[in-house]
Length: 156
Image (tube, rainbow, N blue to C red):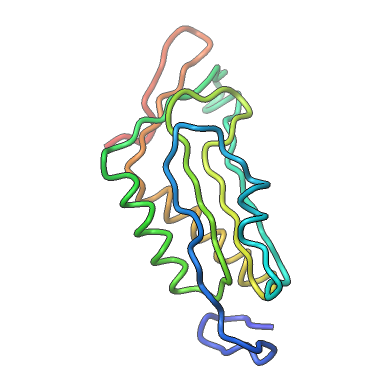
């Protein structure tokens, strides 16, 4: 099994495909199961998924819901970020989506599915995708709090 992106995997028949099958910013609900099915394939021994969901608290306060607002370049940015991370990975296929608009507690805000020949490359790629999308995507979050106030989180 591969332990580093620089060590070739001797168990492979073909090199990793590194396909980006979805990189999407949308106002529609996200479907993690559909993303997992999209990336799965006969060369993949692992499909790793991640769903970042809206929780009911932050900083010791009760959160009622969130609103995500995107910059007009958000779609181009997510495409670039996902392509860069995928190209530098040993993933077979990836799918990433970020939702914008008003979300309720329990709704998925960010979903990632990664297929790889082995679990390690799938987990590592999924983690990098989450980290880089959160760091680079121009989407801002407004939290609606139970005390009737709201706040923008991590806004420049």
